[in-house]
Length: 130
Length: 75
Image 1 (tube, each protein chain N blue to C red):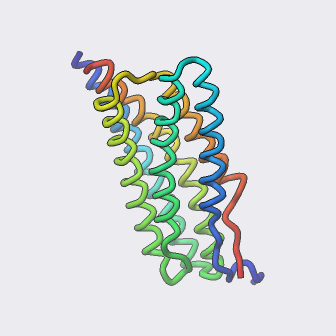
Image 2: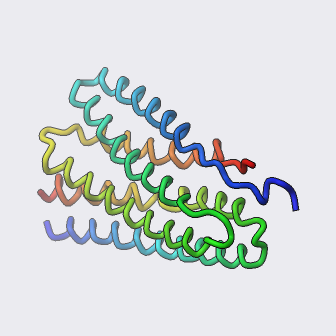
Image 3: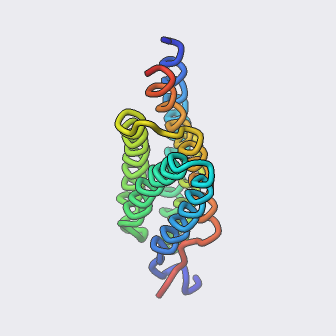
């Protein structure tokens, strides 16, 4: 058994969040070249992904270790359900309350952030720490 | 107009079904493998967390498109 297998895992939530926000800021600036509404919509579209995803990452790592694995798995299930529900509520709120909205900018930025979030978890992995 | 709601319901429903099956398998395998090798629990949890991110990407985009259909196209 190596040393890292017994260690507590450090999850780089802050690093993920900073990179996501930086990319979102750049994307919003690029959409701002199209129009002010597009830039604003792109920012909202990115935030619709970033906020539920941060909640999911925070809640999924509330419990660690073999002794608490059943709690960790149930937390992952609940966090995923709440993440999807939050995303649906945020989209519904934006489409009903925010008028007007640049839909291509909103959906494109959201899709890019979804792909980026997955890639970030893969590239900057949580690492065991003693 | 009703077809738009049916399309949105299919997108959300099938996305939720796929994510549910995937998360069920993922969680079951995580518990099983942790029971076999408890000393690997942290590494397995990290891998499950990464796979969860891959798993929920498609349903998330589906929810976005479904909400667009419901509130913009039909509304």
